[in-house]
Amino acid sequence: MTTIVHNLITGRLEALLVRALMEYDPTRMACQRPGVELGVGGNHCPEPDVSVIDADYAPGQQFTSRCYLLAEIVSDSDDQTVPGTGERWIEVKRRLYRGHAPCEAVLALQEDRIDVIVDVKTSIGWQSERLTAPDQLIILPRFGLRCSVADLYRNTPLMPRRGTGSKP
Image (cartoon, rainbow, N blue to C red):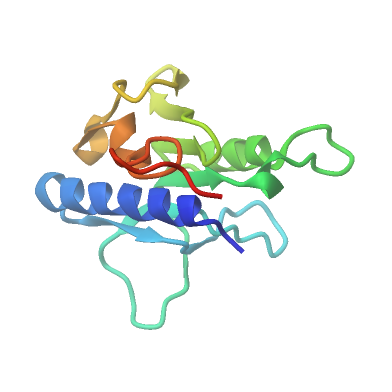
């Protein structure tokens, strides 16, 4: 079961991407939890929390083989170690997502602290940036996205509304 914070961050990221893509590239759209065929063998079809996919899809379609942005809101299970590897699940997911040929960006957003890792594919390979302050900007020109880290975490226990406190 996901947390309220997880759901809020997921919804905000999707909404920001939907708005940006409508203006910047209407051939793409953002959606929550599509199955992604990564082509890594077996039946491994992860469901990232938010993805940018082609806007042209079939009725009843559950899986896609082309994702341009893949985002994970990191939960407790993502911080656990993958048996036999020594790697955390989130690192395995980031590696798999960056290995997906159409993918241009990967986001990993912590739900228990303000911490966003932005991986962007460039002409010389993948570049990563960690953002830990609310006023830092997430700028993804290929998606028309420009927002602050605060835009994703606002009104969560990490950045509560004024006049309210965090409740257990």
